Image (tube, rainbow, N blue to C red; front, side, top):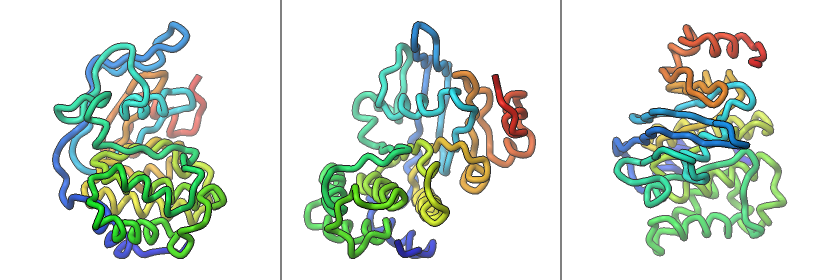
Length: 259
């Protein structure tokens, strides 16, 4: 998987994404609650994610991080409350503006090229532009020249780069990621992080779960901290890492186990 510089990655993304500027639309949550085993597993009275950049979701194991992004992306229906992207409900048309990358890559039992073509099919890309975008996606994922290789025969890092390329092929305005580099080698992690930085610069709003503090420092413009199913703080990354507002975040950053 050939390493590409930031400039080349940016050029690839410019050929893929159907827009160049952030459209200003945000995600809004009101009165959100989700129950599991008759207990409230997640409670978010109010949350607005607006503006440009990358939001890192941090918190201890079991805090509800993965559950939150699945709810925000409309994969799970909340027990109460509403989630909307602009004026559109996420459980309806709002989800069309989003994409998600999971910790374990979700790929079709087809070739690398077939996976990307399938993703492009559900984008707004005209048929006569798909070949050009396919070429850019192969370059972006580092898989150019391996179009016919079965996707599930790739290494873990290559699979995740392909999964990210498939997500971006849909031209999302908002991209969710759930610990996408947790089990990857440093080279694959660096490539994915570089792609995310360039995508954010081009206007894709990124919301990412991570257990890696160093990664959150590298990528985050802001941090949303979860503990026991509740958001204890949501602020700019610099402020969070220098002076977290909640006692739970202090403990977490100190590397202690939250019971």
